[in-house]
Image (cartoon, rainbow, N blue to C red; front, side, top):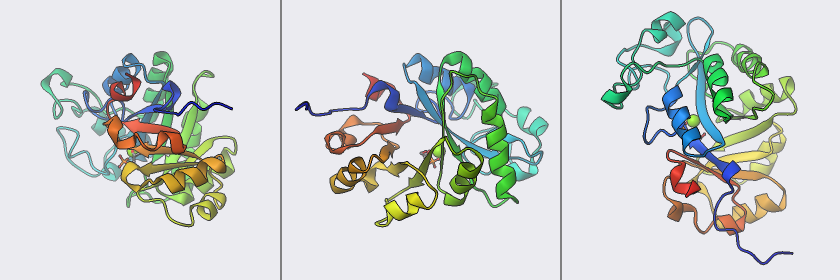
Length: 248
Ligand code: G3P
Ligand code: MG
């Protein structure tokens, strides 16, 4: 038995939130490339369906905030999304950066040596849970053999459907504050990981989850001081806009 106290995450447990989104436009190849260059092994990204039924890597259900265009994701074709500039809003040195599809990201990140936490977003324009989950399952089935994938979602129904389709994938339930009946909720999926807002964590919870081999990762923390008291209690990992602050 070791008496050493855990004071931070291991390298494999630092995920770039939407890539290295502190220094490059979120959910773009540029942000993922930066995460790899910063030494991250994992990135988190957000996916949702567009009008063509393609999976687009974007956080919001519209392109308004992160492109030079406007409109709801569910009303835009892939060709229309590809014509947008997804970089200028962040900085002029990213002008021309494209909004990628999940297929494109999987191909690029295979080359970067990155693993992916695919966060499935549920938006009002989605008509079919099965269409959404099957599209994700089909996309990740094409990943290179060296790439690891985990799936996360705020929607337990997405995770339940994914478990039926891909029972061996790591599934993470996303919560702001972790509910008191977390164990029953995870078992109903079933999922083995919790991704919680760091302000919704406490030491007592982490001692319970670690005793039951449930992984807990905190989002979105960009300052190691915020998590300093949690590692020895069993916090597994962190999802951060700037992996450099946790990788040292
Ligand atoms: O996966 C953690 C985090 O990405 C969840 O919140 O809104 O940034 O997708 P959001
Ligand atoms: Mg996300």
